[in-house]
Length: 173
Picture (cartoon, one colour):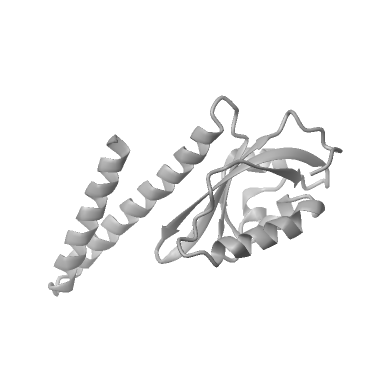
């Protein structure tokens, strides 16, 4: 409820700031509107991440990775760099599929296209199971919860990834 009220307050602030900027010649008003939009986008992004983490309740999230609607990595946390063996700068701009085991790439690509073709373009908050791939090529079983958010007119996806301790790396997908 508190988070929902904060969202509504930020949306209202954005609406008022946009109206003020539309009717003003002062560049500071435009800057205020842009700042309000940024705060709303960041709040929505964090809300999506929090929702994904709640789904994984009781388990350690091992990495958070963000990609854009072209499937390119735009951000990752320190855990992702340690677990996957890539430096942050090496990952940025690379296809998200470099972190996937070969046998899940086709299913990912199909599902990604399906989400992009839906009206609201938000993935479901249900765990997905598959295999990830380290830089060394080593595979490991994972559970992934996806969320989506918009920022500056661009669509992004956040993957919260954890090891799937119940699945052995060589078992079927």
